[in-house]
Image 1 (cartoon, rainbow, N blue to C red):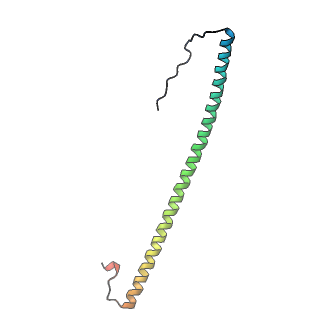
Image 2 (image 1 turned 60 degrees about the vertical axis):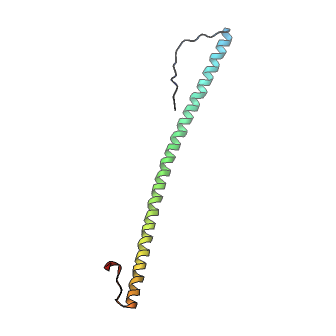
Length: 103
């Protein structure tokens, strides 16, 4: 994004009656006040959104950790169940078959 360099306090020549010039200056001051107000509001909104974004990122990280923990616990549980099932099968069939640790 290119930012335009704004220069201020440079003299300009206005043509027209004093009343037209005063009216034009008043319009510029009004627009300037409006833009300053909008700028302040946008800055506040941006700060609020930044704060909300940080909170959401923190929640996502926490949810991810919780999910990973549950997946790992489930994996360990399923692995233990498979090993127990395999051990029971070996006991039933006799000790002729190799265990996972024997391989």
